[in-house]
Length: 221
Image (cartoon, rainbow, N blue to C red):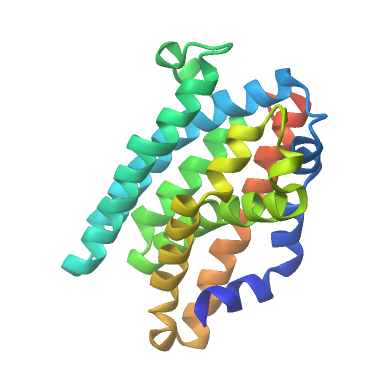
């Protein structure tokens, strides 16, 4: 299947993304709140652009099915993830006051790259560009929950974040996304797969860079 082939071809980069030190510290509860809030602030800004990227995906749609898929995920981000981040950010940051001046260079590099894929490529190129973020958090949330369980989450400082991405609703969204990518398996030849793999590799490395810049609190490059 197409998505599994992308994971296998980019296994090293995928592993570095899922098991970055930021993720490990978040899991064991040693991640400093300063780093978590930095990440949340950047991710809140990221998700606004990520939602725009699904609008770009919709523009690239060739069928009503593709259009519905793009719009569904855009709405999920706006109504779900953004509201979650906003509620957590209320502890230390007013989300509505964030502006372009608060956006890190790593954030800019990631979101503008994804949007550029949509501008220069087709629907499937854009779909794959969005897939590392759309699915990776589900893998991370599920792995953490499987290791900690309900008992390990008692009084955990990042319980809400973990349960969001390990939860049934988000896991269902991940499966829907993977299934949709896999529906194009038979339409992808070797040349097309090479291009898709390069896109997936780049976005996966950008996800890893996103974790890293939250650990170092690095706004600049």
